Image (cartoon, rainbow, N blue to C red; front, side, top):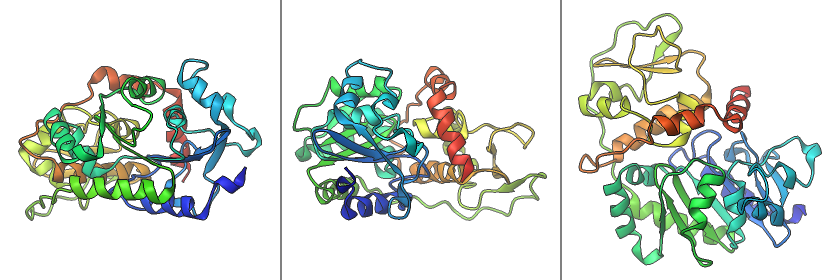
Length: 321
């Protein structure tokens, strides 16, 4: 069973996991399978550790695929082949199981997010990738709702999926094939980042906070500030930072707070995952076009994520690191 976890698959997983323009913190996942067994990144683990830690969990591929079609609760806990390992499969295990490709990689690619948080950006991405036969899936809550939305749209030979307000899926028969497809997508969707101008030094931060070094421009650009405080644009932002970016002076409890015209306050106890998600927001906002008005996932979708036990478990694991 372990022979599926090849060095090339681990190395591929670690490479994309170490690149913050592909993966942020414990986000994203990779899987490798045969007809019977699928190894997938465990919930809360980081792909960057794929070469040095046991971050993958084996599941019965047929049971996981059956859960994708409604025969279970979608957690795939019942499909785990070795419960003694103490790892839970990713909440996105069901969509990995429905692809017949041997290797599936799901990232929260910044280049992709810069496009797919906006209907106009989605259309632009589909044009740029047209000869790769991409499938665009509208936003759905991760887990069974997202798997169902994917199932409705893919064909057996689909290798490339853009997830609106979420990310990217690339598939292949080998790790090299999946990585090559991902490279093509990244190259075509690449947008040169717009770098902010130099801002005046902020005042001393309130006790228990520091100013974000590379992200404070989000609060200094009036148009960008309006965007990032208007809502959330992809699930992991909500999971690790809460809804949108709140305005304030440090008196409220979120890990990051926008102070208009000044900068972003970050709690000194913020986790590495929370800091990674703040950087992701800045990276996306530097690359999205002002001609592509972004659409937030909305308060109802945010509430679904905030009150979800599966994501509370992932938050808890991320905080342990």
